[in-house]
Each structure stands twice: as structure tokens, then as C-alpha cells.
Length: 475
Ligand code: ASP
Ligand code: MG
Image 1 (cartoon, protein in one colour):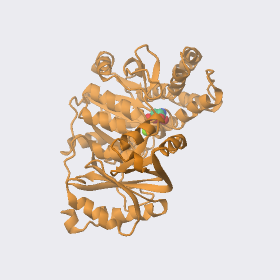
Image 2 (cartoon, protein in one colour):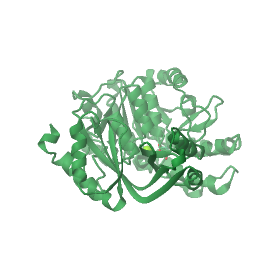
Image 3 (spheres, protein in one colour):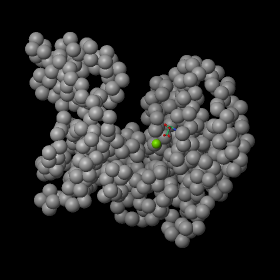
Image 4 (cartoon, helix red, strand yellow):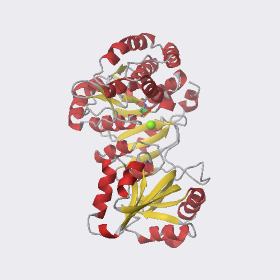
């Protein structure tokens, strides 16, 4: 671990934070919950590096701090596993040779060969036992996390930490909705208390697969893509931790896409609602469900970079006490706008209900919405499948579809209640033609613009609102 020496003299990053006044302390300072994403676990040396970070966070054994580690699959593995099923129909698939080789190589380097081979041996029976295609899909998808948890356990042991791979199926109880299972919080809290807390009590560090759980029949379920963050939030909350650290491959949440906005900077702190809005509108650093769950249970989430572990990162807290104003900008290209105008005969009440009823029947999810008495405009989350709904809509309304748009969103606080913030935004829009304005909460305000003008607009907004705010707008 080349990094290790560099940090030896510095304080372990986490302890630093606990000492600083603006950071929430853990209720039980002995429990340290952290989660590592796929890029942080891409190969044996990265897994070893992650384990080293955990060891530094925990400090010397005398400190008595017990880490709880949640892992994603190695980078790219979940996608590869899911692709197996779209190719091979319903038959239990064999894992690709490259995927096996990659995990075996890591197992050799980390000393986890026996555990990995035992898991691989068990897979065919596991897959064959899946009662449906959907269940098989989740059983297969879960394999990535099953493997990486064993690798991480070995890496932690090499750091001198008493680690134990605790199967997430034994603690994360969900409903039976394969592919997007919803956790049963009450049961999960009880299972964590029964099966995880005693381990921690005796000083053993549980290592848990993110993303997966089991239904009441013990069948493997998954929480949806990116669900490992959610697992970490669930476990942190169940353990009564006040902070959960999400280790990823960026320094934190940026005030705008740094690829597009040269002045973008890391936000030291963010309210959870802002984090959820930002995640939704394009800054996919943390899973929105994780931020929501953490906020509901008063757990702070700290986003930190595995590759710069001494950076402060971004702290997402349930109770950000910041002055109102725009905190960040997000943008997303590929937006499709649909404008629906009622035909004269259908102008009566019920127009909106009818429109959204048709969309719901076709499973069309809308994103931004703006409406007036006789017309409504909305953007589509995904354009697929809209054509069938369009035909039905056209029976009652005129329908216009505009493609090639981008959604630019300002996220912050007081965007509704502090008129100055919104006024400044509109002033900076200047000549940019806007197809739709949408604001449903105090936390975000979104504009739909031509794709080609989005970059310049985001830069102008960032400069005017965050880099050089006008005095009167800032006060
Ligand atoms: N491995 C899963 C995915 O790629 C879950 C996660 O990484 O959060 O979606
Ligand atoms: Mg992720």
C-alpha cells in the first residue's frame, strides 16, 4: 500500500472530523460504518488500499472502534452479470471466464482462495433453486457483492482486523420485488440487533454485501442498481450510527459538473434534500434512497474519495443550517418535452387526471411537469414506450413532442421562500430560450433549454450565483 506511509504522521481522517465542531459525532463512537463502491474495489491492490483506510479510521486496537464495512461488487461486475441473463434466457448461466479469473487472481493476492472457491462451488445449486426468472436474475446479480465481501474480509484480516463476512441475506429483509426490493425496516433493525450487534460487541468487524438482501422466504433480492449506498444507510441507521462514510472515486459532491464548469468546487456540506435533488438531476454521487433513508433516521452521510482519503469530502446532513440560496447546479442532456393541449370538448375538469391516467396505464414516468388550465407540459424520464401512450393522448388532446433538450437545475435552499434567489436566477437566464420552468419545492428550480445552450448556461449561472454573486443577491 504505497499510500500508507504518507498518512502515517497525519491524524486518521475520520478522527479528525470527529474532533471538528461542525461534524456530527457517532452515538456509539465505537461503531464506524463505511461503504466502498466498485471502483474502490476494482482489483486486489485497491481492495487492500480500502482495507488500509478502514484500519486507519479504526485506529489502534486500544481505541476500541469496530468498523462495519459494506461493499459493492468490483467495478463493472454487476453489469456483466446482468448481461449474462439478457443473453442466455432463463437457464442458470455459467460465469464468464474473465470474471472468474479476475476474482481468483484477487483471491490469490489477498489470501481468500478457499472462501472464493467454496462460494463458486455453491453457485450452480443456488441458481438452480431460483423459483422464477426474476429471482434468478437477482441471485446472479448478487454474486458480485458475494465475491467482493469475501475479498474485503480477507484484506481486513491482513490489516490485523478481526473481520467476519456476515451474509446480508441474514440482516437485510426485503419484500419480494426482485430487482427493486423494498427493505422492511422494522425486521431489518431487529435482525441487525440480533445478528450484527453481538459481533460488534465482541470486537469483530462485520463485512456485508451492499445491494442485496432476502425476502421472508430467504430468497435473494436486490435493491436496484447503485443500491449499496442504501444498504450502508440502512445498516448505519439500524446501528444508531450518526455518520456513515461512503467511499467513492470522486472528492465529494461538486457545485456543478467539473467537466463543464471550470470553477466547480467540492461542497463541504449539503442538506439531504439538496443531495436527493442533485442525485436526481444528474450528479449521481449518492443513491437518492440512501440519502432519504439517512435523513429520516438522522444519520449523516459523508462522501469521501478512496483515492484521496484525507480530503474532507462532502457531508450530507439531515439538518443543514445554511443561509438560503443556490448551492449547486446540475444538468442533464437528452431531455424530451411533451406538450399536451386539451381539445375544446375535453376542456372540463378532469383533463389532467385523464392525461396522467393514460401515462400511468402505459407505465410512462414523467420528470418535470408544468400545467395550466387547459394544457400540460412534462418531460419524460425515458422516451421508450411513449408512442403507444401518445396515440391514446391524441384522442383527447393535441400532442407536441420536442427532443434535443437539456434540463438545467439549480439546487439549494429558500428557492421558493426567498424571492431574491429565484430573481437572480431568472436575471442570469438572460436571452436563453426556455421551454419549461418547473419548481415543486423550496429546494430546486429547473429549466428546460436547448441542448446546445446548456453548457454555457450552467457556466453563467455558476459564475453569477456561486463564484461572483452580486452583493444584493448574496445578502
Ligand atoms: N453493484 C451494484 C451496482 O452496480 C450495487 C452498487 O454498486 O451499489 O448497481
Ligand atoms: Mg454507487
